[in-house]
Length: 66
Image 1: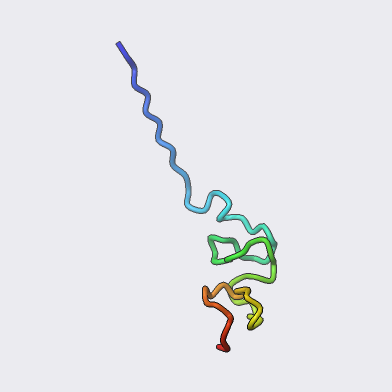
Image 2: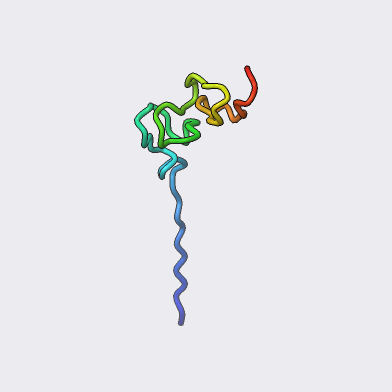
C-alpha cells in the first residue's frame, strides 16, 4: 500500500519582498515603488525631467515635459 502526501503551499500576497520597504521612503514595490533601492524614487516623488529616471513611478518616460 502506498501513501500519497499532498502539500498545499499558500501565502499572503505581499508576504515576500514586495511587502518590504527596503529604502525607507514609506513605499514598497507592492505599494507602487518602482525602484525600492533609492528613497527618492516612489509614487508622488518630484520628477526630474530628461534624466532617464522615473522618480514618480508613473511608468512614463521623462523625455518630454508633462
